[in-house]
Length: 305
Image (cartoon, rainbow, N blue to C red; front, side, top):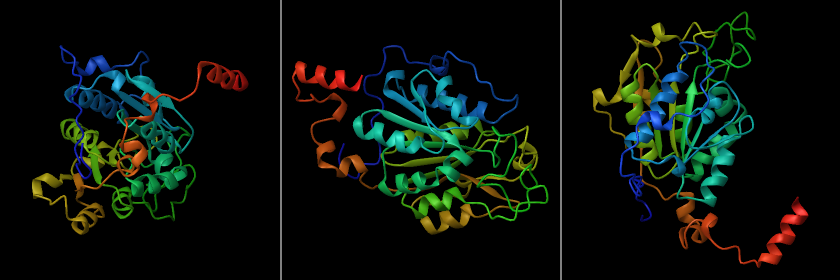
């Protein structure tokens, strides 16, 4: 892989018999509300991993807190369910320690753009080589229906019974302005399209955001499937130039009769691990010898236990 190459090789070490989406099903069944958009996102991710020829041991999923953040438990791969708003910090550490892993961070709009907003900004500007899938339902679902950072102005919820006075964050423009090299938006009601976005994001070399409209059927009755169905339009159908960041921002800010999904921006740029000489030479840190004797290692472990 050369510096500036934006496509990772995820086909190495393929199994003799290709895995199917069902092979990425975890041992625990989802506990989401019937009809939740997160079911579609989970199924889409499993399908994307299978179609890319990945193996479970090549994948690490990392999440924070929230309904959607239970996802690592539902996927047959390495997984970590971490702290509220901190999945990108943990995912960055894992990716830097072993940049041969396919690292996928997942979570919701509250976890990612609220308490995790600081990590979102800095992971984007550093161009950490990982994929961030955000299930954006525009509400705090786990805590039973308060406004989130992406809730629309005037939205009535348990925390804003007279309507929200706050303007929502725009994850797409925020990611673009902060240096993300792959910025896309999907919709759980458009499964095939969403899977293709996920596959491109995972293959991309650099920080890849896939913000996915994932309707909360229990607590958000403003932005449900009936709301999105007549409004969703695909950028691909209009021949959008994914290198044009200005047009990408303009398309991302449309919120009315037309709401765009698709790949807004993609560009080639060296990743953080490529720019760090100690990481780019000699292979992943996780595979390197510690340079300690067996006796020294045992003493360290004994002090820590």
